[in-house]
Length: 106
Image 1: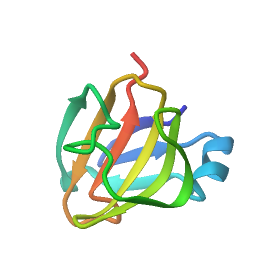
Image 2 (image 1 turned 180 degrees about the vertical axis):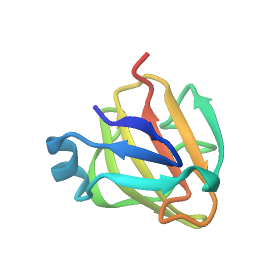
Image 3 (image 1 turned 30 degrees about the vertical axis):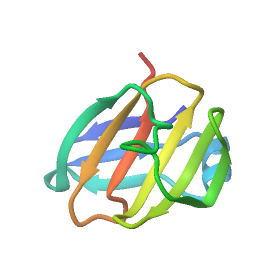
């Protein structure tokens, strides 16, 4: 399962080998200074404030798995969402991805 790791001045989104294959993406590293906020999302599948746009590249099956890049009007998000549980949303300014949407392991 994808994990966000604090490495000093950077946040790292660590993906497992299978996630890297499914997302067609490697580990993502961004400076903490670009982090705007982190919030909880009870339903990441919601079209109103959750995952919006189309997935490319990556793997997806609605309400089961969304893994990879999501392209939308606001830019690009990265999702690693499994099942119908809640997620953490990391919002960034000026990075490759505007948001990381990650299944909350707790």
